[in-house]
Image (cartoon, rainbow, N blue to C red; front, side, top):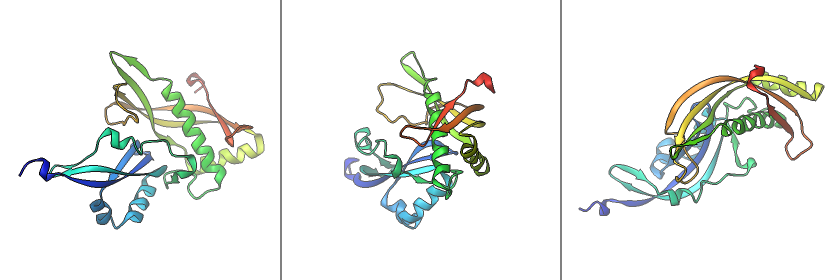
Length: 214
């Protein structure tokens, strides 16, 4: 039997997941995986347990052979788009989980502000890019409530959060999104920031302060 005759097309369900255990990652499930896990609801409850946020991106076609399942970059690009903010489901590792809307929106605004800071550190050299990604933002539910209560009273609050960062590399010719598989290092640091009410599209504005303010 030829290798080609051993291959078969399979549908793959793709999720984007943001978790303190892995940063942003993509989970791929075959029909067999879904059945073995107890159905799609059971998979989503597992993702909810371990994540800050997760979202189902869609279904692509892959190839299965005796060694496993593969898919092309072109096929993955069909679903690897930025979902609208309201498409993401909130996971239990998010300190705003099952809290009022303002809590999880403030946490997301802080997370995204730190992500922007880390992207500004990216550096190209020798044909590759050294990049930085936020893995974990250590803000407890109690701290988050304190922040939002402070906003109601003071309109502007300052805080310092410990974060975990993954340094990784990629070739700029590779299609996006870039995964964190090629990690070079992982480290923690304290990030000072200011949160205030916003007159713009978002409910709050977050400003990451210079690190020497720590």
